[in-house]
Length: 163
Image 1 (cartoon, rainbow, N blue to C red):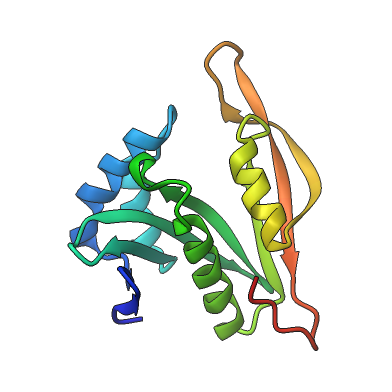
Image 2: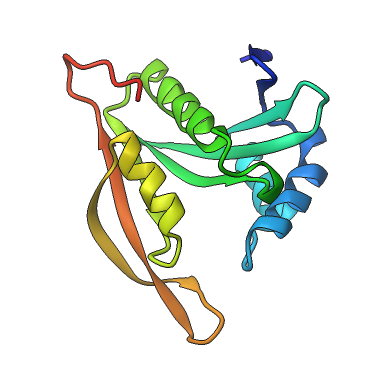
């Protein structure tokens, strides 16, 4: 992907040069953010990183995907708080699905906090279904850990999901 233009925003592959900005957005969006090193390790390990930018160059959001056997694992999807509720999450999910299909994988797996209903709603709207729960998966403020809902989007061989 070398800069796919979408109206007033565009997608690019995440590179080392993006990481300072990615880490800033991550800290703005999450109480328990990934570190810059987490993103750096992901890129070094060959995972897919995707940045979504406004035509002005401002980072709107990003995602990190890891191919595992026959499916893609969506490790992180984040939209800058100032850009939420404007379709950026959907744009990033569509790109995640496009990359998954390009790798000829069977679907996308992700974890999401039960305390993040907006994300759950976005994933369900896109076609993800809850398939399980990981106990004590996430750090949490007033308790030691928070569970994760495991969700999956499966591709049937004959469908071409585009949400």
